[in-house]
Image (cartoon, rainbow, N blue to C red; front, side, top):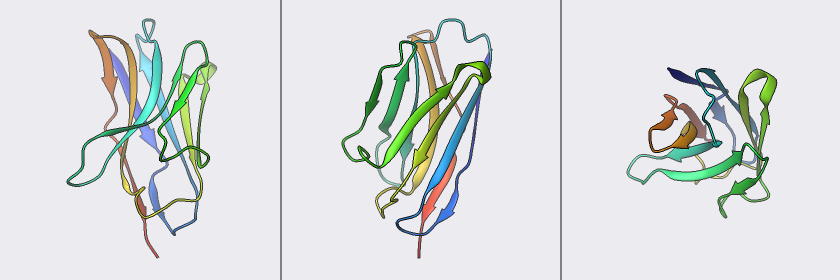
Length: 116
């Protein structure tokens, strides 16, 4: 009963920027955190950034100083601003809403491509 819809992916040059959005709908009363993960071909899915109901934020070391996660509670939306994109950043970026082991939802993902 929870749906997550990502948007904002696309093609960008190295050093460029993108802003991803994840809009949540449905019964989201039990959520503890929302965040972004990414998965590139042949690689494991990895955490990018998370934000909790209390506002605590955590970033992967690889994106610290370049990416910023934020939320708009009124819109049930989480954002990921990506700056200074690097060759290692291209991947499918997925939004996650997590509360418990029984309340864990993922979006379908949005593709980010970095190319000259």
